[in-house]
Amino acid sequence: MTTVAANRFEVAQEHEAAVRRHVSLVAIPRSGRLGEVAVEMRDLLAERIDELDAEPVLLDLMLASIEGNVVTILQALQHDIGCERQEPPTAAIEYARRLAQRGVPVYALVRAYRLGQQFLLRRAFGTSTELGGGEDVRAEAYDRIVQQVFDYIDWISQRVVVVYEEERETWLAHQSNARQGTVRRLLDGGDVDLVAAQRALGYRLSSVHHLAVVAWTSTPAEPGDHLGGSIRTIREFAEEIGGGAPLVVDCDQATAWAWVPVPRDWRFDEGLAGWRSVGRPGTVLAVGSSRPGVEGFRRSHAEALS
Image (cartoon, rainbow, N blue to C red; front, side, top):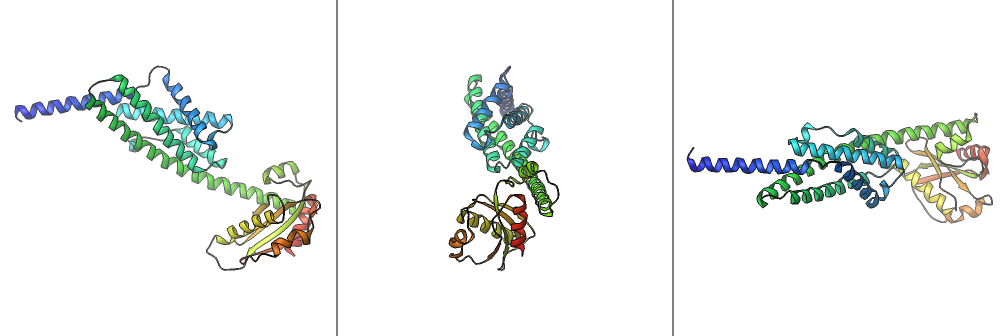
């Protein structure tokens, strides 16, 4: 190697070392500041994303998730650790599960990671400026920080979305099974704790007049479309006859059972007049009569089935 080449190689090594040192210094949290940064980020996310401004327990878990992610990112920057050698923070995984259980839309979770990325990069740029040094070193160091943070956010976002979707499917299946079991016990006429049943169903039983509906699809459709079409029609039906939010459970892949709460003075012919005047091919509805209380819940359903 010639002297000129050796000098260039040495300069390149010194530049590389300076860049790595700058990245590491930016990533070292200042005394007591990590907790403050996490709280500030949590408050920002809760303010910007309405769906995440929930009860204190979820906010605390969001804070733990933020702290876990920030620590992971900073350690990766300090020690040049790639995503392929990292594990998602436990709190981040659990936070995704809790959001899925509460029905918080997944886009809120993804948006939180993007806003968190923006927040963290702004802080990193400020810290880099405070540290000073040559512009060429700071520019390359910041470019590496941006790339590494982007790679991490992209990686962790995919991981938490997968966890969210799996948990959501499991939770919905559990909820559906619980609702179906409660409805079956009510229809069988056995002893049922009404308070617990109403909580499980999200539907009032004892002080309401019920109009039972059995819905099924009469036209060909793609697999999985039958039940969705029936449920949509039931909700339209409930709205147009002046009823409240219906309780809907699936009986099989093509049939749904439902109960629509209606006013005490609701009359069958008057209530259904508007619905009958509109042609809706595809879904067939069998309707019972309006009856009160738990016994009415059972009798109206029996009428719809008949």
